[in-house]
Structure formats: C-alpha cells, structure tokens
Length: 313
Image (cartoon, rainbow, N blue to C red; front, side, top):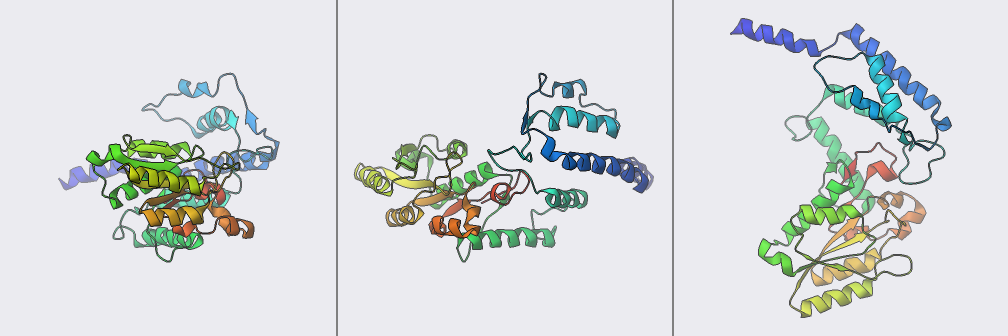
C-alpha cells in the first residue's frame, strides 16, 4: 500500500513544475503582459474581426499539452484583440478596465497559494481579510453592523439580497401570487433574473412611475403600496437604485427607506454601479441614506476599478 501511494505521489508531482520550468513560462507571460500594457493606449477601443476569434476552435481541449508560445499567440489573436478593450484611452462607455495591474498580482498570489476562504478553520487569515473588506465597505455605506459576502459580481449579490428578503418575510409558495414587488423600469436586468431564480416569478411586480430624471417617485410608491394593502395583497419588497447603469439615476433613498420601514417592506438597494461614488464629496451628498436599505449590492469591479468578477452583498 505504501509503495502504491508513493507511485501515485510521483504521478501527482508531474503537475508541479520546478523552478526552471516555472521561470521559463513566467518570463514569457510577463513579457506578453508588458507588451500589452506598453501599447495599451495605441489599441482601438473596439476591434471588429471577421472571424471573431474562431481560431480557438482549431485548438480544442485535449490530453496533449501545448507550448506556451502557441497558447499566448492564440490568446492574443482570438481573445485579447477582437472586441472591446476596456483599458483603451478611447473607451468611454460601460465600466473602465484600467489600473488593475496590482490586482492581477494579487490574483496571482491567491491562485498560487490557493487558500480556501470558505470557513475560518481552513484559513483564518483569508476569512479575516474578507471580513475586513466587508466591514470597510459597510462603513462606507453607513451601517454600524452588517453581514455580507464577496461575490463574483452584482448578479449573485442581488440574488442574495432578494433571497434574504424572502426569508426575512418568511414567504411561502402559497403566498407568492399575492405578494408584491416594487421597482422601476430603470432597475438592472439582473434583478429581474434574481426574482426568477429565487422562485418568485409568481409575485406581482409593480413598476413605479419615475420623474423626468428616471428616479422612482416616492409618492407613487406609497400610493401603490396603500392600494395593494387595501386590496388584500402583501407588499413585501421594494428595489431601488443607487446609480442606474443606463443613466446613473439615484432614487430618493431617504424617502423610500422611510416608506419601506413604515409599511414593513424589505428595502433592497442596487448600488452595484454607483454606490462607491459615496467616496467623493459630491457623491456623498447624492447617495446619503443608503444605510436605510436592508440589503445592498456594491461592485468593486466598477467604482473601485478592480478586475471583473468582484462584487459584494
């Protein structure tokens, strides 16, 4: 048995390159990165190619390895060249993608060490790091105490918020078709997905009227809630925005928070795009009273200029 384990260990160690092998690959990768960054402002904001990177399909996943030069060439021609270049100086829309080099090094360290941050016992340091980040972000929003998770982005963070509200209100399947959700047409489409994924498709959705600046009308919201209560329905969730993706609109958070509290609704706030602007003096005034929300989404990969794939609830 011991001999068999040693044989298997030898096979497993083939996955671990030695220092010389690591250096050979790393040097080529670093050179590729340096070339990319040295010419980043010369690259168009968008490159349209006829094949759209289809040559990747000519190198299918297989049992045989491929040399690093070939892989980097495939990456350059079929992934990094066609499409949107968020770090380009000509890129003015969506979310900026520059200033992420140090974050990339952080990802490198995290991937190499591969610490499991799911529970304190496995990696107390990693868990403390996550909790420190969550506490810092909560402090930016305003609450003295909060719980949360780092996520892959706003979609999962929003889903967590909707599910948290569902559980807090102890909604059962038999309640869904008389339970009401209030939102506007400016709410991000991920919230519509979250409602479906959370099993709440049968809930009644009320699209609250907006003002000329695409902000939810607090008066119209309260009127709808009162009408629904009078009709025997169950108003339970209002979804507001702290900076919509389309126009940057910020709903009247103070008034919505008061209405939600007065009528017992869960107040979910989508601040994925705009919440971090609270770090600016102008944004602080516009975004005040975010702490009145029961759950909030913030995306570091937007306002903090971090790599895609970093969200927070």
